[in-house]
Length: 194
Image (cartoon, rainbow, N blue to C red; front, side, top):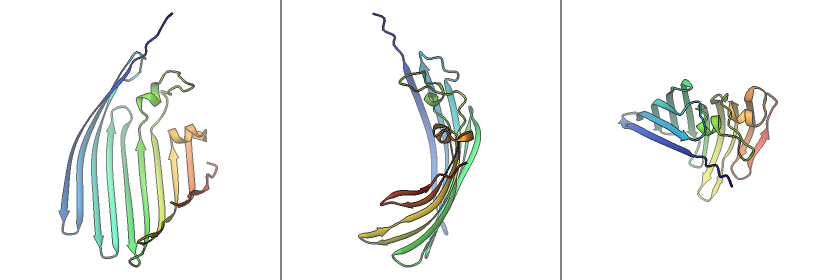
């Protein structure tokens, strides 16, 4: 009897520096990160390591009925290049129980080594041609919180290009979700054709 052994060993080292500052008008967070990823395998991966260097900044202010949060991030990935993402969220308290919110943000996610190079196994195989997932989302919300009674319906839109859209069989890997989110019932909405 012939038994073939397959080895997959991954190692990830992460280094982070973060400084939280209290300012006269809000709080500021500054950070640097380095993520070193390595893979050792009996499978012949095209790339066996990558480094991601990141810079992050976030600012939050709560003034009276106003809440504001702004975030910015830059990731330099030696396999997929530099990508800048961010978000801005605003909230206004109408009363002690009612609050309206609005936000917009962008995201980036690189495929894992398994997403790219996993050998055919259990009906799945990695795709070395995958591109990073990129998305933009926006939302508006009306929140009610009176102790035991809570309601938080949200309306929004997510536009994503990359892995998620490819998995759903969308043209060019593009995926759009529009709808209303009620945390008690899940998503109600539609996926328009892209």
